[in-house]
Image (cartoon, rainbow, N blue to C red; front, side):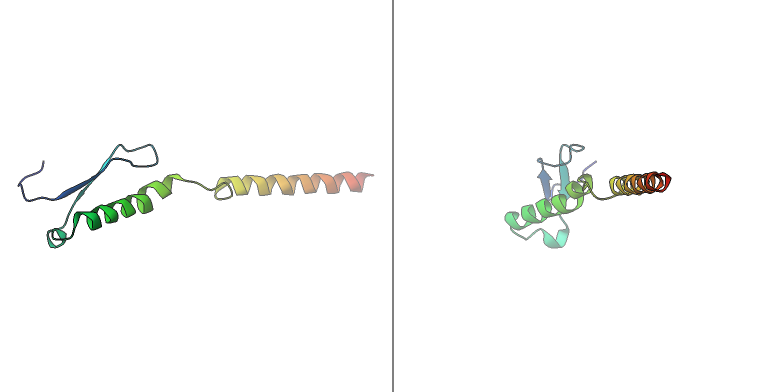
Length: 86
């Protein structure tokens, strides 16, 4: 519940990642005097840095790299066993 009429709120609607519709920022008392463009830019930067990037995964990071490495080692071991049996 929001009380008082002196609160300054920034609303971001275009949130990436697909999990959230919008983000609300309540501006600190000491930053209320900042221009709206500065506050909006900081809010956009915060959303893009903290929220959206966590949902983007690189192909080579995490489990994918481990699985590919295990497959390569298994293929190499199978090839070596095949050569030794000839």
